[in-house]
Length: 193
Image (cartoon, rainbow, N blue to C red; front, top):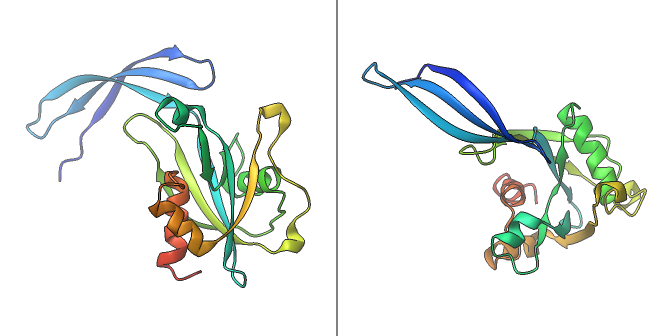
């Protein structure tokens, strides 16, 4: 298997409004030993973390529902998306980030989060690595309403749903968020719920 040698020749910032869109020109070696110059755009929004809260006895999970502009632009009629709680690291350790986001978005205060894997979510154009977590919850861990931070423009609805129902929601298209589908399938495959 060939592992190419890559040299970054130039990076040009195309946009730095919300996150950073770079145009990167680089040299990459080919199998035959020659080098090719390519140019691609890469969107850098930082790395993130996502968590699925689950209740073993009740066989329920905590999800969120909120407006997501990119989905609206790409055909999601109302722009609303059901997804697992997530956020950007903002220079935090992934576990600290996800504990903070869990409390802000869902109102649950968790002490333990189990990291299960990390993944590039859209490696053709986005630099982000997403850290995936799961954690058990109980109703006595609910310390606030959740809903996100007003100053960040978050208007998040918190959902407690039966696990089996969420699997059906994947099948019927109600849940279309990749990170959420990955976490729900992880619980199913591992026999956690």
